[in-house]
Image 1 (cartoon, rainbow, N blue to C red):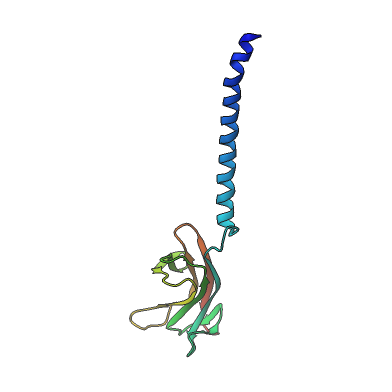
Image 2 (image 1 turned 120 degrees about the horizontal axis):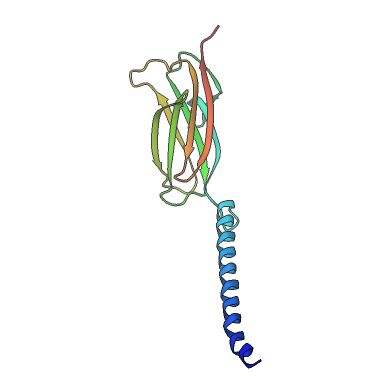
Length: 154
């Protein structure tokens, strides 16, 4: 009986360490989940994103559409964002079919704001007929993806 009493404090201490380790793992997992879901504060987000042919005088989207007539020389991505951390980095990527045609890095300097990017050909010729896609991505995930098409009039 005496030997059992001597071993009891050792096994009790191990059990407490194991329980403490499990509790720490669960706590870390809960923190990660709450940060990703925004429960511990607001996280960066794209509030609205559209593809348009141009912007109006107030820099708001004009002629928002998913199907654009051939002859267009430029297409605009306009988006509104909120809860950016100072210096947030984004990437705006334009695709023609499956091919990446332009990728632009972006550093956000304000917490909330609006940004616009254009896809155009340097020589000023119309954009080719076909399917396009534009994405907005952070270093860890895709935040927005918009598809549009340039078609010929029948």
